[in-house]
Image (cartoon, rainbow, N blue to C red; front, side, top):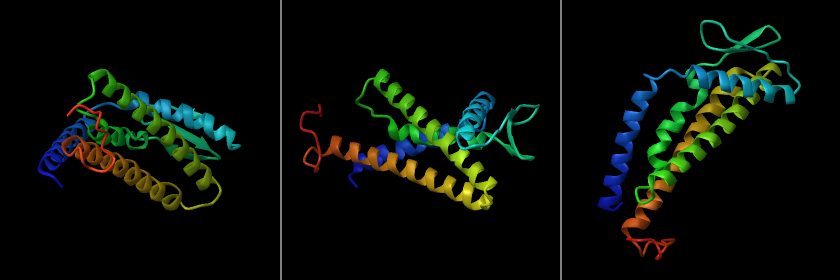
Length: 173
């Protein structure tokens, strides 16, 4: 790995650490409720009636007497915040980068709604929660984050080494 690419990578990791620290300080209630509403609708397409119950704590989806609490970790806000530095491209305008982050957020939200809905559907069908939820959760976190890291490293390598395969000679150096 070239020195410039390593420096860029370490800078991104540092920003990721700061954003992850912010994750624990911010309230995620509105996003938890949005996830609950969207998952409730999604579950209705899978044949489940899953009303969203919001009390003093985290929102819950209730199916056949089982309550599924939607915590801040369920929102995948941590994944978006950890991935943001790797989605950011220093040579693009702030506007273009904000659009990239918006797209990332929407894509992750859609993925998350599907994940929560399928996990609850499988749990209701008799599959163990650790398989239906936890295994898929780890796999999705690893896949999305590693995809963003590889993309960022490739971008950085192209920027610092125009002869790198796949580099675009039209990009300003």
